[in-house]
Image 1 (cartoon, helix red, strand yellow):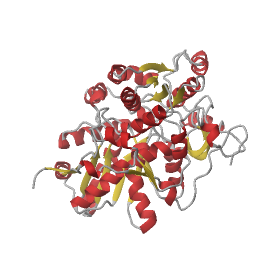
Image 2: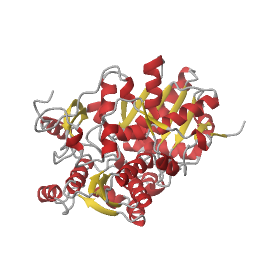
Image 3: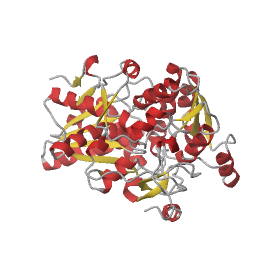
Image 4: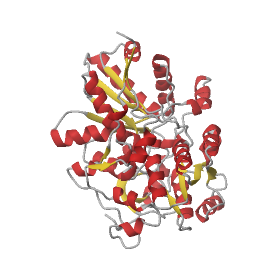
Amino acid sequence: MSDTIKYLLDEQDLPKSWYNINADLPVPLDPVLHPGTKEPITPDDLAPIFPRAVIEQEMSAEREIEIPGPVRDVLRQWRPSPLFRARRLERALGTPARIYYKYEGVSPAGSHKPNTAIPQAFYNKEEGVKRITTETGAGQWGSSLALAGNFFGLEIIVFMVKVSYFQKPYRRAFMEAFGAQCIPSPSDQTASGRAILAEHPDSNGSLGIAISEAVEMAVQRDDTKYALGSVLNHVLLHQTVTGQESMKQLEMAGDWPDLVIGCTGGGSNFAGLAFPFLGKQLREGGNIQFIAVEPSACPTLTKGKFAYDFGDTAHLTPLVKMYTLGSSFMPPGFHAGGLRYHGMAPQISHLTKHGYIAPRAYSQLDTFAAGVRFAKAEGIIPAPEANHAVCAALEEAEKCRESGEAKTILFNLCGHGHFDMPAYMDFMAGKLQELTYDESEIAMALSGLPCGFD
């Protein structure tokens, strides 16, 4: 049998609807609260930030939400994406496990992020919006929204976490090639950015700070909205094309997963793969284990608190119930910039709290070692974020080797690492450092959680 087993779907197999896990939750989500009134937010509260269609999706409990034709027309450029059976990796590990990975690096931006950037740009264009502000960590989301803005004729302004702005110059160049403006955050462009710089002139920045800057700029003009690349319900919804395609592809392979694995920063790529499988299991039963993998230097699910918190550092956003390290927590500048967020998607947090998702954390050096092992076997260099999922998949496959169990492992290879080669160069030269945080930093950040909202 061929070493490379690739399961491809036809164009007509591109999902026609997104899957909304809110319809199948055994326990409803905690409401999103207005920080001033402590009452659940209304669509009108979100109107200054998001277009109406996005707000409706954010608050929807419908199981299926139709994907607009113009969005599907763009997604067809790279979707359905391939599912691979990692036979060479299985041999290299000497495992009886069957390992599959859904490869999202085939998109124009090299990651899963365009799956939501395209619909968000479309809905903003339909509502007459001229300009979108956003934040980005590693740059994959900023790249994707720059691409989408170019397709739909929108001006895009991206606040990029400062440490990543300098670590990943090619991501910055990618955004600018599509006409986006990329600003290192914290910046002097906003009041929230200037406040951070006044207190911490050498700040590396964080996603929480960049979100504050993007939201602040968005609400200052009527022709401007804000777009988010992870965390919120509508973003996770848009990513479910990944899991829906994977279900069909595994049926083609005559297989079904025992484990579904994805990396988690805000949660969108994990949810995109896992939620269609988890929803089916909630409705019909099953024994799939869902593993959400995060960096040990920003351990939101494994060491955070399940509580109401702000999604940004300047406290401009509504309060959501989620696992959080505290909105003031400043993660160290490790290379998986897309995972450097203090909070976690409310849906993932909720499902983790109720025992449906098992979180785990790995160090930077362990994840890069896993990424190199995977690349040597499969020929694809993963993004630093995706290396976390690779690390868990390898660990589970090695457990199968020791136990003799032939489990089926599915993980999301959510992006390639072509823009991250300096980090790989440092790793191979022994220069990549293991970055950690002081436990007191999390304790201090958590001590500042808003009170009176539980």
